[in-house]
Length: 275
Image (tube, rainbow, N blue to C red):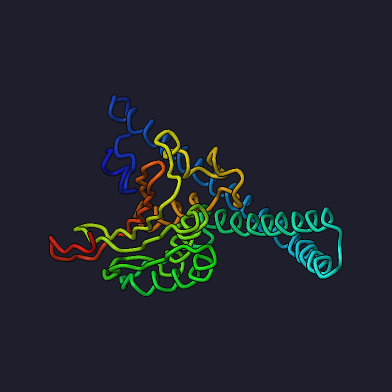
């Protein structure tokens, strides 16, 4: 009966006064209630996602206007204090736009409106595209951004995996001080390929490592750094919906490595990538 319930084929077979019939009846009622509860949760998630999308569309024009007027003010001759205020407005407007975009992506992923479509493919092109987007920022901060061995095949959605990797690279470049380095490579294991993003920097203490993938969580030492605390949460959602996961290894004051694990195709055991 439990096996049938798990594969969706359960149906009541006994209609009498026996204990087996009573058990079947109760199990049937439980499964029906669970199915109804699941439908209600999905409906609520869809409603929340729709609400967030509506809010995003309604705020796009005001945010764009804020950016436009801020740029116009920045072109004017202002007193030093006024310049600081304009810069603060520009920073907060950009933060608001990033937050709304991240919320829309997250809600649509959670509700299933934006489904992922994992396909077998090479990982290297995704890594090179994502790294290229952060090369200029890293150079401006005097950070060495390097891509190591990136060969490997896995089953993943290229668009969403690039989104997840960009979140990891954004995090790495953001928290790496000038003169530091960010290194990206692939480790191929028997069941998974791990895209590893390492950076030199302050690191993350062990007590916080279990919290950083939570929505809106910001580390105690990160409040002065620009961000909304949703990138790592979104990365974890993307990984899990592809059958993968994300891990962190950090040595406070020295190095932090985020590893995005993607399920592999059937490959010979012992095939490994960079060390």
